[in-house]
Image (spheres, one colour):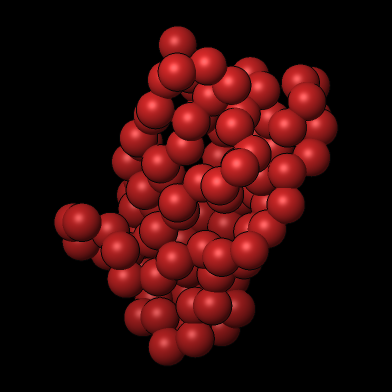
Length: 99
């Protein structure tokens, strides 16, 4: 789940990728849906198939657009305590701050 602090464009899902090394595109989140947290369409939930992902720290790259003309790109990580592990570990919720 990715929570933004404003209404986001919903015509296209955000592009969300993960990887251990730049450009952080080893795995891609797909599908998903927009919901309301604080603002209309400010929370996106999608899934990524991490089958075969080696244990370790990952950086998430997020490309999204707000309800206005702004296109934004974030690189988040490494996840520190929210590492992916081969035994089925989970990652937490990331909340990017938009300005």
